Image (cartoon, rainbow, N blue to C red):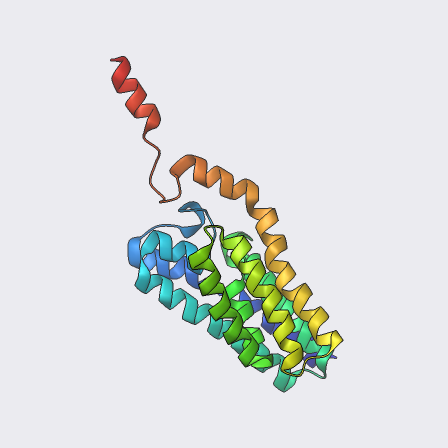
Length: 210
C-alpha cells in the first residue's frame, strides 16, 4: 500500500516538472504563463520562444510521461495503480506546486505515457493530427479527429474496454484543463495578443488624438 502511494506521488512529481517554464525562462527570460496564450506547454513555447525551445520542451514533456509510466508499471501493484499514476501525472502537469498550481494541458506528457501502452496507435494518431492540422485551422478540431482515430486504433493494437475507458478519461483531463484555463487564456490574449507582444492600440489612439 505504501509503495503504491509513493508510486502515485512520483507520478505527480514527474508531471509537475515545469520544463516549459524553465526552458522559456532560460531562452528568452519570460514567464510562459503570461505570454502567448498563457499555456505552459509545447505549442505555446514554440509560438513564444521559437522552434528549438519548443522541440526541447516537447521531448522533455514526452519523456516525463514515459518515465511516469515506467514507474507505475515497474513498482505499482497492478493496472489500477498504473492508471492512478497516469492521472497523477496529468494533475502534476496541469497544477504544479512549483508554479502556483498553473501549468499546461498535458498533451505531450500524456503522449509519452500512452506511447508505452499503444506505441503504434499513438504514432499513427500523431501523423493524423499533423495531417489534419494542415487541413484545419482549428487545433482542437484537428485533435478531436486524431483522438477518435487513436481510440479506434487501440482496439486493433490489442486494447480492451477497461484500457480504452482509461485512455478516454486520461486525455479528457487535458480537455478539462483547457476549459478551466479559458478565463486565464482570454486575459493573457487580451493583454498581449497571440504573439505575446503588448497591445499597441491604446497608444496609437492616443497619438492620433494628439
